Length: 144
Image (cartoon, rainbow, N blue to C red; front, side, top):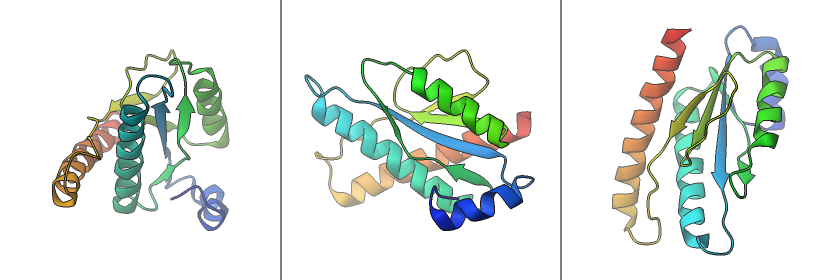
């Protein structure tokens, strides 16, 4: 499910089937690493969207959380909000090294240099990342 009006209307009535939230998290560095930050953000968004299509009706893909200087307090706060809502399995989708003292899984994608590759190669690399992320999601479900 996506974070949109139609899907969210269905979410509350189906929490017994939809127990997982995918929270994309990207760190932005507007000073030194703007293009790298862009590649990370785009990779995370594509992997999240394509994975949600495969698991539609089983998980909620939230909007991307952007951080600077690796500050994650607002992410921690949102994780608690999601848990309070009733989603019990939380997975952060990121390309950053994140250590939170909260009960959630963190999956780190490989950053794909979007500006340097042709479309076919980008798609192939994204597909590989989606497959690996889907396996991670399934492992997360199986441990609960």
